[in-house]
Image (cartoon, rainbow, N blue to C red):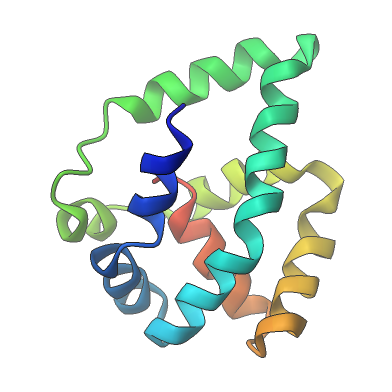
Length: 125
């Protein structure tokens, strides 16, 4: 996993604009939520990869999404399934999902619902 590429893709102006349109959040809200949540999401991914009981299913899930073409972010984000994204966030964060969402919402000044939607929309990226 190329963390620099992942981070630059998630925080790119195209991603921010697309996620803003998809979720109804402002570009600033999207950027703030992603910036605040990114370390926890990366830690969650690292934990999934290192845990023998979850590494296989995590690798399978990554392989399924590796086929997604993110070259045209507007097109990609137009097809994002928020339910699937919520499942991804749930796998990455486990029982900490609701806590992180509430913490991110509080720190960024957005509602927990909006923060959750932003994270769910960004997860497949």
